[in-house]
Length: 54
Image (cartoon, rainbow, N blue to C red; front, top):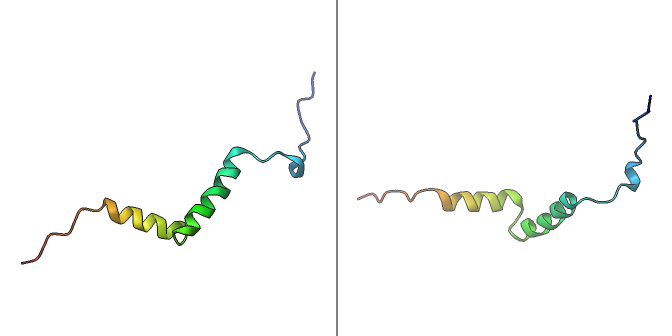
């Protein structure tokens, strides 16, 4: 029988690409006033124009 359990040292784990991407996007969204402000602006562009009232 082979023992397959491994002991992981989380402090020594190399930074993965997803965490690097999150760091980059954090800086980009900060330029737009934060992630929520960016998403609100993007969503407003997808809404159909309001009909003109006469």
